[in-house]
Amino acid sequence: MGKANSKLTPEQLSELERCTYFDKKELQSWYKGFLRDCPSGILDKAEFQKIYKQFFPFGDSSHFADFVFNVFDGNKNGTIDFKEFICALSVTSRGRLEEKLIWAFQLYDIDNDGYISRDEMLAIVQAIYRMVGSMVKLPEDEDTPEKRVQKIFDVMDLDQDGKLTMEEFREGSKKDPSIINALSLYEGLV
Image (tube, one colour):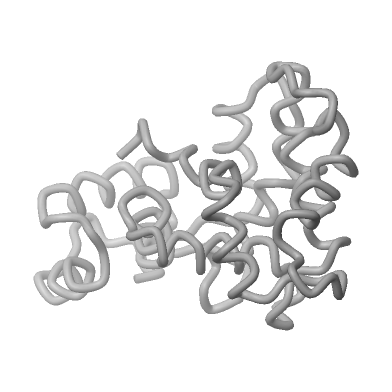
């Protein structure tokens, strides 16, 4: 689906209906919008950053956009085609909690080693703080990325080994819903 055809084929539509939570009409509408914004049929990192900038005009969203881009880019070829875009959007906007947790874990596990290290968590949290800028008033125990990461690890890192497994992340996210709420960026769009 990297080639920019003006319409999805019936086969493409059927496949996307099977692997997303969107119906045919929604898929066709998203595809039309995707091609309007990306006439080549692919989205590169710079274009993706521009989209994020529209949602967060008062902060620096470029770092967070890079992290999200890396998860959307399922085949790791440096671009996002429509299928990658709509599948990720489907999970983050309409997916079941378990699917969102897996997606979020992939976001935080920057090096894809199956764990979230304190440094990886810090990189993501710093990117989020840069993105929201001073638009959000934070409690004193979370007013720096370092404090926020410490608070997250205090809750989630049950064996205190300095890294989070998927299971620790899953259980900790149920105790701290703000981890998953970060994915709610798309809620109003879909």
